[in-house]
Image 1 (cartoon, rainbow, N blue to C red):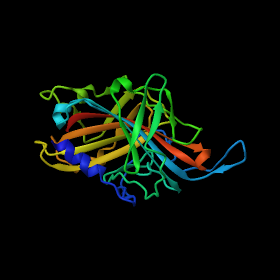
Image 2 (cartoon, rainbow, N blue to C red; image 1 turned 90 degrees about the vertical axis):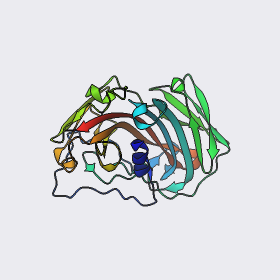
Image 3 (cartoon, rainbow, N blue to C red; image 1 turned 45 degrees about the vertical axis):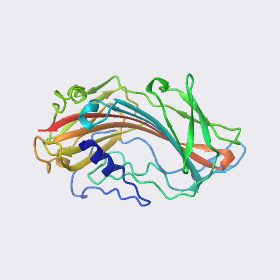
Length: 295
């Protein structure tokens, strides 16, 4: 059940970003290409001369894949969820909690800006090339849980809002052909947590990749019996197919600690939406959670 403790710790949000970096005199560099995603809402001039400013919406399409569901008390390997919210324009982004590319942190907290909600009806329609679904209003947000078979990968989707002729578009994420070390992905609990995660420095590789996206590796470290969370550390870089986790960030944890390894790719865009006079932030995320132990 230790996974649930971790999800609660990292999922707590507040109106103020509390992401902290390691001390400046500590080398926390990540082997990565320093290109990637700017989470600052842009100013865009349309063909009609209208200037679109700020951020007035957030769409998050998220697929989570757990290598060993039984190891963390989950009943299924895959979760696919869509959520959206619309609000009065702000200069803040919902993805600003992600560490800057090439940085590491051991104080990662997911945050969300304060916003004034805008009601766009009881539901919104999401249409892909093959499948479509409705996201229903719950409070000030819109939610849908989607079967994995209904997830149209690497394809353009449209979002239709009540009362608007213009649609919002996004391009869905792609999965992985491989992730290494492969031992992290063992599905049987009797073999899980057998991948050595080297405290002296650990390199992960994956494919496919695309450097226009960002990539984050987060390690949640637990006692050897999984009963207590000892801490966590995260590094980000471009989605370039490999990342080396620096040695200094893991040295404080004892050897043979259990580790949940979260590997996630992120694609973040700000789309001008002229009917609202603002941008809509779209966030595509595909996360794989593997297991290992510190060595």
